[in-house]
Length: 486
Image (tube, rainbow, N blue to C red; front, side, top):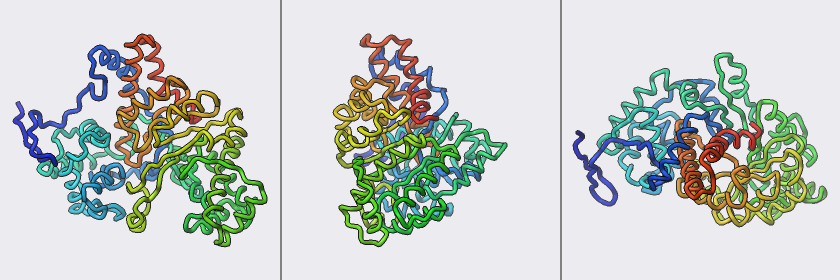
């Protein structure tokens, strides 16, 4: 019998009757016993299916080099803005978390890990807590609940496992049962890491790039002119004029396709795709190269280029994926010190019905065009995205992503979208992560929640359990494979 343990919580001292890091087999399944039994059966049928990962940010060089992960902090904390933002909100500076500092010496890594463990209570109720618990318990066999008093012991246990060959990146890739892993890459990336993996006879996995051209489509961004010049250099095209710029983008898209890419990913402040005439596009492009573009012109050009990206997708077959509606780098001092992707991005309201109308009027029924629309604004799920996907054969609703990839939000998504668009008009789960070991935990969460939603339909006699089982498996494998052309 395990003695009760006191854990220091922000709300006071909490005594846990069972201090072990328990991962309940029915976590996230419905509380009602009858529905839980159905959900359990549905989940058990999909729990071991392969992981299809059509959108994420894991560096493929991790798998090329296949070096042991250096320490627990560099694996779980420093690269994961889901974790660092919550710790930062509790008063821990990003410097203290090792962000932007490269490899950490052991003493510093232990300090970062201790800051996570001693603030474990602030993660209560968040999906971050669910993912970390699953990673620690199921991958590394950790049973102690993280706290100030257990931080060093957990660090030592995880570090010992990381030194073993079975915990190198390639071994974990196989253990996680990943069938395909897509990673976003800059259009100027030579994709040498992807090429090295594809040519390695000892590697049997599948890692593909996704084309991410945002910085080349927004003339107001600092350094845009130099980026476009570099784009032309890599593509072998003179980008000194607008036609050359378009040709450079088209060539790089084809280059990505030749290295296995099936999608192009776009993330802008809004989803408007308003085409310009050639004369206006040429004029604004020249002004941008000269450093004389206005904010209004730059926005118009970016919206025009989103339309052009749809045209190119119709030509080359890359799936067009939109992740819009985020105010990037909301805290300028943090952006200046650490750059992007450190947790300082905040969602905004967004509109799709009118924003996408010009694009869909031209390309919405084009054979083979796939447009996957993600949002951080829940209000548009039932009002805009589900009706759009319920009419246009090209449109799919992206599942909850980023701030919404959480249990209750995923439940709200299924309820809001399914009645109008059904299951086949959604994308399948995307893990959207840089934290490699969180991938299986995130997918497992989605499988459990979808099993729970389907169990509700079975309990209400809206579906037979046999059909629900087929849908559960489709959501895991067939849907993302079909939607992202994998």
